[in-house]
Structures are given as structure tokens and as C-alpha cells.
Image (cartoon, rainbow, N blue to C red; front, side, top):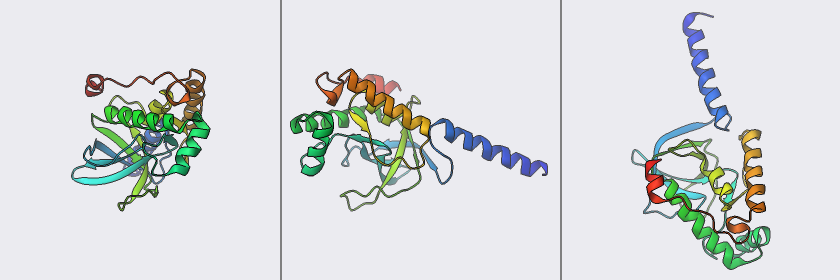
Length: 198
């Protein structure tokens, strides 16, 4: 192997390792850095429009499911109510809280990692699964689950087992502490000024 080939292999390995550390496998993954939330478009806690250099995409979080924000899909609201707390009204309130939580955390530029897997959805525009790293280096999905505003649920394909285990542990801890949708204590929203500094 000559020096050029060795250097290319080294660069590939470093990139692969970087993706592994963030909880995603490298094969087929693409990174979108410097993304912004398209605040004028529809969004909720786990699904939102993202803008980067004039390109607009809709992403839905991998492996994380926040409560619904409306009763447009009563079957989903009923299923979530049964899973979380048995009260549909509380589900909708938690969904709105998750939406606000996500909006505040996405005030600063963030990174999306995706394999461009179709996440379906009711919009005419195609939606893709994505994993979001915030400006402070934390993971949006994990922050939502830790706050009791989401469950560890949904497409897990391509994600590291260690990351999935973190989500599962965070859900169990939020449930035990009765945070957010798990039964009473309101999840603490990040302050706008805190998110601006991130």
C-alpha cells in the first residue's frame, strides 16, 4: 500500500470512527452540518423542516417518539395515551411541550445525520429519518427522552446498540421520576437564552 492509499484509508477510518462515537454506523450515512429549523413550517417534537444553504428537507427523529400535538390521528393519540398515562388530553399537552422543547434546542445551528430512509408522513414533501446533534454536542432524541417528553420507540436501523441502550435507560429513568408525560411533574424546558448560548 503506497503513502497516498495509506493516507486515504486513515482518513476513511477516522471518519468512520467519528460516526461510531456519535451512535451511528458509517455505512450509507450523510452528515448535514450548519442546519437551521425552518420555523415558518410545520414542526413538532420529533419531526420538523430543516434548512441548509437554501435546501429544505423534513426530518423525523430515529428511535424517538414524542406525543402527538393534535387529535388528527386519534388512533396514535389513543395508543400513546395507553402507553404513557391513559389520558388523551395529557398526551396532547405533552406533545405541545415537546414541540416547544425541540424548538428551543434548535435555535442554534445543528447537525443532521441520515441514511435518507423514507419516514413517510402526511406532508406532500418526502420526510426522512435523521439523528440530530445540537450545537452543544448533545443528542436531541436523548434530551427529549430524558425530559420525559418522548419514548425510545421507532426506527432503530443503523443505530449503535450503545446509543439505543442509552435511550432505553433514559426512558426508564424518566418514567421512574414521573417526568413529563410519565405522570405529573412538568419537564423542564430549556430557557431560550440558554439555547441561544449553546
